Amino acid sequence: MNKIFLVTLSSFLFFASCSQFGENPSGDHLEEIKKSPNYDIEINRFKNRIENMWEQMSERDSFWDNPHKRISNNYFFNSAETVPENKLPEVKPPNIKEFIKSTESIKFIWFGHSTLLVN
Image 1: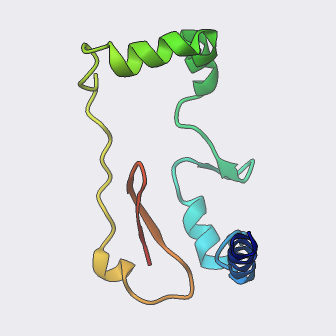
Image 2: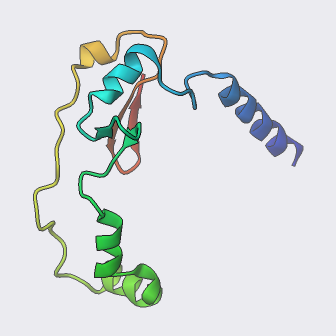
């Protein structure tokens, strides 16, 4: 029990002392973020590409209406939906030589689901 507490406390202190984790963007990094087509300068935050996306999704279907049925239908008994209706979005990766250059900030590339490249 003491080892778990010590590991948890050490991890928390490590991440709390790293300015890269949880630090608000500023300077050049903030300007780069503001150039994103999904960034709304008026409200200083990212916005969904599709307006009212959450409302549209909740109107179409709700997991909580019948969670047991939704899980069994979607994951076990629905063989018709094995291919996406549309092509999945692809983003050209950044120049890897630039990505791996040493900087004072942490950079991430998300490959999908639970795969990250961290520099």
